[in-house]
Image (cartoon, rainbow, N blue to C red; front, side):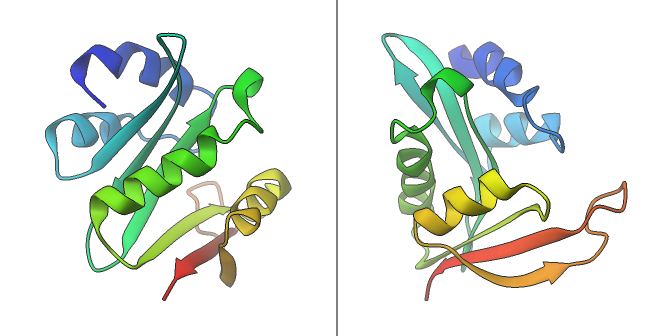
Length: 131
């Protein structure tokens, strides 16, 4: 993710129910890691993660027309690799069955349900991949 990607990433971020616009700045300026997926010169997805002893995947978006083409998996793998940790953790709304299915498909396992994780009282699932 580079400054030239910012406009496209901010546009994609509007697809998220629980977005944090400051994460884009943190990915561009550090300490977060940001990666984009590009198709024919256009940004079609992005991932932002916080590196550490475990990689915390903070946001992942792939444009609807480009889902199920491997971009999501590639983005998760890219931020995990850039972070260098053996384990990746993600938290997603518990009722988002599509996200749960996606993460489980790429090797994540549900570790816990976190009650009232989001400001609106929505529960979350914490999923982990790796050691």
